[in-house]
Amino acid sequence: MIRLGMAMGADPRTFYGLSGVGDLILTCTGPLSRNHSVGVRLGKGERLEGILASMQAVAEGVRTAKAALGLAQRCGVDMPIVQEVNAVLFADKPCRQAVGDLMEREAKEEKAPS
Image 1: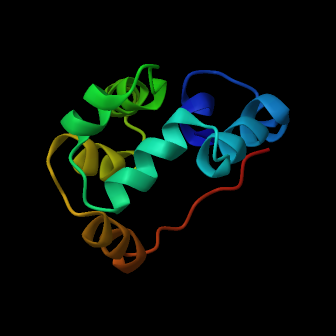
Image 2: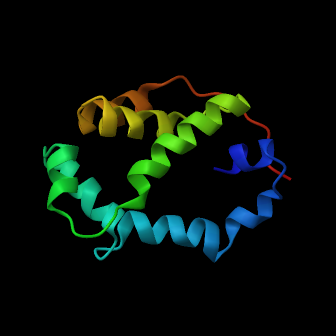
């Protein structure tokens, strides 16, 4: 997220506050989070279409994942987690395989944000 924000001219410090990392942590781990619920159900093997059809509220992360990938590609920013999330959501990639592919990818040297 920080790399993409910086590529678009954002101050990297913006992402370290409650609206950045705080929101990310809550949406990923909070049991009341719609995005968290979708992820748990995907991890149990349910298909996205069925999950979304059974929900009364919108899990905004589903559409945001696709938008983030498109934006990253247009800005030339490597976002491997976003790529794998999209593969799980929209290409039926098994969650275990996505995590394995992330863990086994070649590490890249990066410049720390200032």
